[in-house]
Length: 285
Ligand SMILES: Nc1ncnc2c1ncn2[C@@H]1O[C@H](COP(=O)(O)OP(=O)(O)OP(=O)(O)O)[C@@H](O)[C@H]1O
Ligand SMILES: [Mg+2]
Image (cartoon, rainbow, N blue to C red; front, side, top):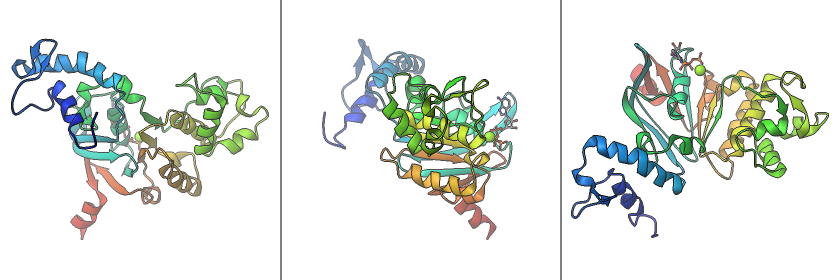
C-alpha cells in the first residue's frame, strides 16, 4: 500500500522481471530472477505472474499496440502499427474495406498475436497477463451483431448471468436501448432469435452494446457502429458513451469520416500503416 507514485507498480513489475533492481535481487519461488533465462522468465510470467495479476484484478486504463506487424499466413495486414487508447478518450480508426481495422480488434482481444511488436495493457505486455482476465474488461460491439435464442434480458446478460434486472436495465439505458425494449410486448422478457420478435440491425446492435456495457468495460470497441445506426443516433451515442461515469477508453472503427470526427484522435489505416490524420494533412500540404 502507498500513495500514487510511491513505487507499488514498480515492485509488482520486478516480480514479473519487467523491471530489474539496481541493487539486491528479486527471488520468486526460490529463483533469483536476475539469473533466469528469457524462456524461464516467460514461463514464470505466464504461470505465476499471470495469476498474480488476475488476483489483483488488473484493470487496464491504457491499452497499446507497439510497433505491431501482423498478417494471416503470408498476407501482411498491419505494418509497424503504434496505437494507444487511454481510459476516458475516444480514438477513431478509419480505412477502406479490408485495410485491417477489424484485425486490430482481434489483436486487442488477444485472439491473434502479432508477428512482431507487442500489445500492452497498462504497460504490461499481453504475454505476461491472463488474457481471459483482460477480456473481462474489454467490451466489444461487432460489425454484425449476433443475438442468441432467448429473451432480451438473457441476451444482455449473456456474459454475466448473475446480473440483476436493475443492472440489465441500466446497461440498456446507457446503450439507448431501454425505450424500444420497454415498448416490446413483454419488455425485457421478449423472446428474440429465430422464433422471437424481429429486431432491426440497429436494435440488435444496441442490445449487443448493452451486453458490452453491462460488464463496465475499461475499453469499449465499436466496430462500424454506423452500419446499422443512422448518423444522428451514432453521433449521439458516441458522445453519450464518452460521458459515462466509468469513462472507458473507446475505440471506434469506422469508414465514416463524419463519425470519426466525434473522436479525440483520428487515425487512418492504409497499406498496413496507421497514420494520425494530423500527419496525413502534414504530408499532403
Ligand atoms: N481470419 C482471417 N484469415 C485470413 N485472412 C483474413 C482473416 N480476417 C481478415 N482477413 C484478411 O485480412 C485483411 C484485413 O481484414 P479486416 O477484416 O481486418 O479489414 P477491415 O478493415 O475490418 O475491413 P471491412 O471494412 O470490410 O470491415 C483482408 O484482406 C481480409 O480478407
Ligand atoms: Mg471490419
